[in-house]
Image 1 (cartoon, rainbow, N blue to C red):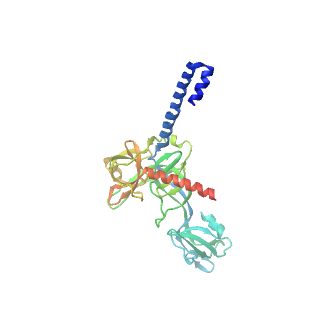
Image 2 (cartoon, one colour):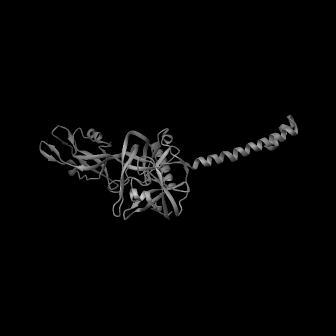
Image 3 (cartoon, rainbow, N blue to C red):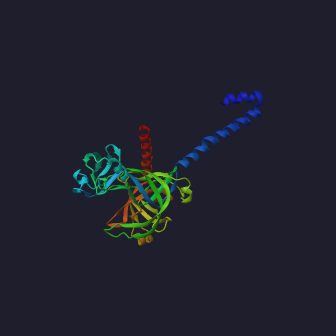
Length: 357
């Protein structure tokens, strides 16, 4: 390129103009290849810190059996669910190949009263049975099942990056310890109204109130490292989330950014006692709360603090995941980078599944 420009400007403007143009070109190239990549690199590591409490209202795939009862028929009491061999905790996925996600789906699938094929999961294993609906005193066919098609609770938002949020630091599990598959849901504004203080031998808990119709994010995936999804437009600014960068956790002093009263997070002192890069069960960090104020309020780590960001030197390095019941001031945390990777994988796998369909 230099030879072409020299020839071109020798022909038209002489050597003086040629030299000025080459200097301008070099200066421009320096700006393009130095300044712009630096800005891009900074943006790629920049995230918005959470620490705020959130009310989780999540729709599950299938319906979970939480109760089995009798149906009062003209011939006496009958329990279709029990006779079909269904048990508490089973998750019904379909009836006669019709997808089941709520009670209306069940009613629509058994309107003819004929024996129906039920596909369900038990302890993570896919199973199948046949159930015979029974007509109750009102003439409606029933299965004698109490079901649940959602889960709800309080947790903490960890961070937001590129419009996607990650929270909790651990998965939401069913009663048998299996990961619950969700089909959507919301994160709602939440105010912490009280605390059950943690004590040796008993985990504490944050008490809060969901603010109805104030969803600030849409839940999409329940991963091994927490719930992730999409923030609604303008919510990062409304919530006044501050910008930070990610860092690498090290043994030493740190802070936990969490909310134990109202809806405004605050930093409390803590320490990272151990870092385990080989741990794959959401327990990369052994942590200890050292802040007297936080210990006085909560006793240490309590339920609802899951997902609370852990900071070192102003950088996000992890999130709180577990408490040690025998010592509420101690617990575990997960690497922030691990949460980020899991969230990316969930989105990618979800996109691939939709493409395949």
